[in-house]
Image (cartoon, rainbow, N blue to C red):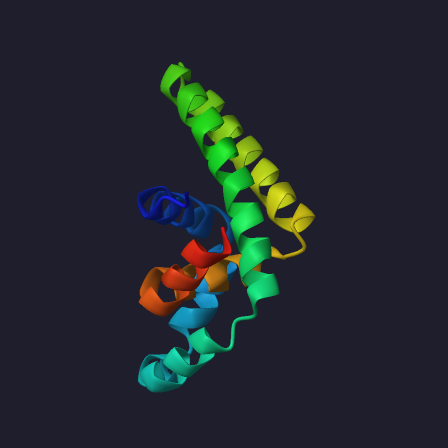
Length: 127
């Protein structure tokens, strides 16, 4: 069963870790904030194949996140914590790429899923 709370936690973690440049690009594009109706239409245009790739990637990203959460809790200094954070991001990126998505596509899908009950329902059905 796809746990929505875990999805949101994973999305938050990955989005922060993998998409710094995507966030900066969004900040410079004010037209996107005016395109809410168009974004809703885009939600409906996500293929089942892409949603399946996202589900697969998200499962693996969640495993990495859980593994590294324990390691972060045991980190004794900031340098070790930063090294662990970089390792976690690298492993999450690898997991996303193995699923057939790139980081920006994964993050875009995550944002769409997080804001669309229709996509959340489709994910539930695909599992």
